[in-house]
Length: 159
Image (spheres, rainbow, N blue to C red):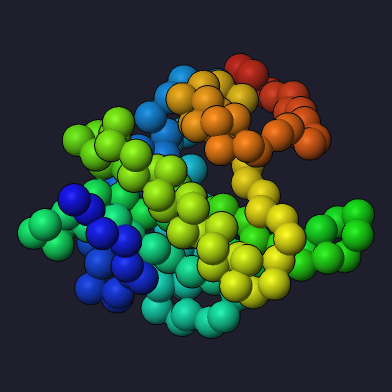
């Protein structure tokens, strides 16, 4: 059975190796897997190597201490109320870890972290085309709040 523990700096390679999972769904035409990974790497590595009370990275590890997945959460301020809350930045699982309840356990652990800070809410962003993740979040009781719309002004430049 997998256990959940705080990430260690020595987990860096394993965390980065899960980057392809962050774009393992039909991406919008104007996004690339590389830019998604690069953006997530910046904030993930900063939180891993310069931890503070406003972020947490939790890993699910197997019996051989191999990283099977992780959740990275941060503190944010609500735009409308100014209230602090938890925010899931990244949730990623290795393909072989899917279907074992690890995503649910990682999310529950992140929610416990946020509750421990006195937060009443947890937020996250998910691509509209990521139906698998959206299904998980729906089952966990998350609901849509706002919709972020994008228009590609130069579709001829797509790579």
